[in-house]
Length: 374
Image (cartoon, rainbow, N blue to C red; front, side):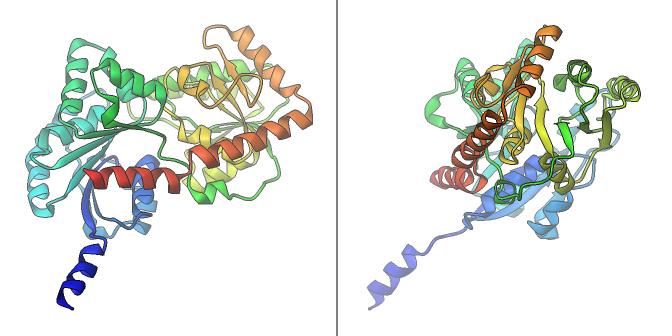
C-alpha cells in the first residue's frame, strides 16, 4: 500500500519556480506571462526595471507580492543604461530569496544581458523578439560581443521567426537550443466578434525610427478619402520624430490620431479597420500584425523576410518596398482593387493561419514544456 501511495505522489505534477526579467509596462510581457500561466506548471515572479508604471493587466495575472519593480534612478532619454547595472546586487539578492528553477528574459540586449550576468547556476532562457537580434549585434563589435555573451550564458532561446533563428545561427547559437515560434495571439483576440468597419487603415506600431511612420503616412497620402486610425505617441528618446509625425498629421484630414490606447481599445480599433499597416525596417514576428490578421484586417506590410513568413504578396496581403514610394503606393492601390471575393478568401485564410500557427495557448504550452525540460 505504501509503495502504491508513493507512486501516486510521484506522478503528481510539481510546480516549478520561474523568474521573469522583462519590461513590466509592455503588453509583450503581459502576453508572455499570460501564456506561461495557462500551463499551470509555474509559480511566476517578475522583475521589471522600466521607470514607467507596470501594465494594468499584470494585476490580473500576478499578486503584488510576486512583482518587483526596481527602476534605476536618473535615467536620461539620451542614454544612461549603464545605471541598470547598479541594480545587479538587488537582483542577485532577490534570486537568492526566490530560488527560481528557471530565469526567463524578454528582449536579449537588455533583460537578457541582465539575466546572463546574474544567473549563477540557475537555468536561463531568452525570448528574442526582433531588434535585439536583428539590429543590436550589428551596431558595433561591442554590441556583437554583448549579444554573444548573453547567448553563451543561456540554456535555451525562443525565437519569434525563422529569420531571427538564422541570425542566431550566424552568431554561433545552435538550432538544437532554439524553439522557433511567436508566443502567439490570445484566445480573446482569435475569437473577437466581427466589427463594423469604421477605418480603412490602422497602424499601431511604436513611434520609433524602425516603424517608419512618416514613410507610412507618405504611402497613404494619395488615399486621402480613406480614414487612417493612427495609434501611438511619443516614445522616450524619440521626441523629435514624434514632433515630425504630429506635423504630418495636422496636414491630413484623413488621419485620426488616437494616441496610445489601452490594449482592449487598441484591439477594438484594429477590429474596426479593413487593413493593418506595418512598414518596419526590421522585425520579428509582429504580434500587432498577427492580431490584425486574426481580427480580419488584410495586411499591408514592409517587404522584409520576417513578414514574408506570414504573407505572400498578392495572395493574403501585400508587401511594400521601403525605398520606392511610387511602387509602394501602387501596391496599396492593388489591394484596394481586389475583388470582394478575393478579399474575403484572404481574410479567412489569415484567420486560419494565425489560429493554427500563432495561438498563444498552443504556442506557450510548447514553451512551457521546453522550459520544464531544462
